[in-house]
Image (spheres, rainbow over the protein chains, first blue to last red):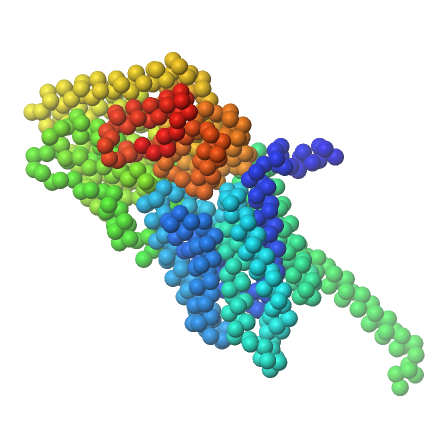
Length: 313
Length: 316
């Protein structure tokens, strides 16, 4: 048993401060992005979610210039961008996609400027990698309380708006007919998504943030059609991907090139993708079994009909 | 305006992912870093890729050279420097260029091949010292054996460019060599009293002088290289480095002032909390009030004071 544990967890895993911080941050963020992401997938806003993450990189890199933690930059810019997308895109999905694309381009342009300034006029070398691809093992311990608090607030808001949000996500016309303030709810949702995406960006980087926001929820919705269940399953899948990613990244210290661990973001994103494929295989198998069963049942019914021709009459 | 993700080739990935915007953006920013050489007729226009080399050129050339430095801002990381059109112009006009090599300032080669000149002399310090381009630690000017050879090469090239002042240049090389004595003495003193003392570093910046003084740098090389290259060190190495400070296993924490991120900052805070003396080191000459020799003496003095009295010298 001990040997198995030692093979799974490289020496020092449970005693390492960077690992502790990464496990806590990763789990909290995965729970929030899982819950928020289910609505992102149902509402068909994966592209907006991705855009908010990348646009946030402008804020993250600007925060470095000012000496602040990138999380505050990610969040400030992502929330403004969410407002802009809503303002420019109005309600028509096609206009919203164009607006999202425009805001995305403008935000990345700013990120290019700020990252350049970071690299050339301040002493922050690894900033481009940290902002774009994340540095989970280097997340500052002082940020832990803020990350946990932000996550808790997002989850509480989501719980309060849950029924209205679900109704408006499934059918905005029906929700409007029932008196749900669809527009205000849409803006509120984009803001929550901006916060969730920013937390994901702090964890696995601005470019990869979308993997956590969309991946586990999409996987969960393959496994269960009940939205409430999907929320929980998405959170659990996210936590599993992040924690397993942390373990693998820690173990990769002993893989070539020796002495340099592989980036934890790579493992997290790869696992998210594998889980999605695996869920597809699982649902594919159950569907095949179900259709075979119903086929058999149909055949049985058909033969039953043949045995009692009089019944049909 | 094109945005591209470049990974500068050089050494063992001695590079940093740098986002570049177009030339207009570069020029507005980098103008401050590249003062144009005075185009005084009769003076030899010379360029030092790093301010320490520019400083030595100025000391040897005296009134007969007009020197400018490409990288001189002590608040930026030279590893991520990207050349601007102004720098290209300065290098294009120069007749003597001194650059570090070892992948540290690879952009100089790019500029030189873009502005070909048959009369320009280029001293590549890494080749001058006979070191391979793949040498792991490019901070060659921290080695006490480097600058005397560079000074000699500068004197020789200046004499070839302006033969009428050859005697002056030769005399200045001798003066320069003699002026390094306080530094070498300080290193020897450090070695005699603290040889083998354990230290931790964030980066290999001052490693050559630490080695010359016989100090024992406990920080594993991959950690130093990762910080230098702007990638995340492994969690194992971070724990190890934190352990050096919390376990008081090191007498000094040598901190690169020019390359900081949240990780190195948290290590700095940890060192301060634990009462481990901190010595800030620089990749280019801190300004103002330092020349190469006094800068090097100041760094060694700072280490000496940290070892002898536990005093921190965070900034020069």
